[in-house]
Image (cartoon, rainbow, N blue to C red; front, side):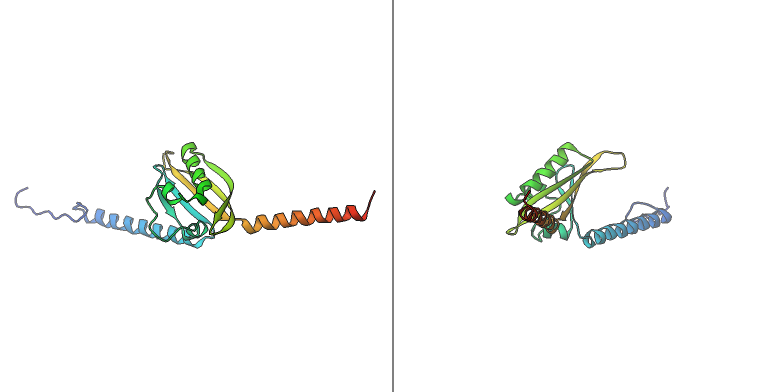
Length: 172
């Protein structure tokens, strides 16, 4: 209408209530994102996710430490580039299988040589699905179980030694 001045804000909306709702929604999304980042950084497990196109979407500091990855930018890079070291080949293969098979949940135990030590990782992988059920990638949760496995092996060897000693003491 000629002579009428309508002001638009940056969102393109002339409705102040809609603009306030949009700002509240953005603040809530920022708060939730910050909360999720805090949770991921606070847990003892390593967490990484890969989108359906094979790009790294999430990685927490514990996963970086477990896999001896540098502190450089890793997000949005192809997982093959991030996990390309020969020592991480079993994990890279697991991610490939998870993306191709789109399995809902899988459990694996992977021995990896990381920083000159053998680490045994328990890896849980699961499909990421959106609200409509469409495949969006995979998430992996890594737990270093090296000490637990070694303790179980030591207990098993102690039991073997105990039985052998018993057999030596009690012939027939």
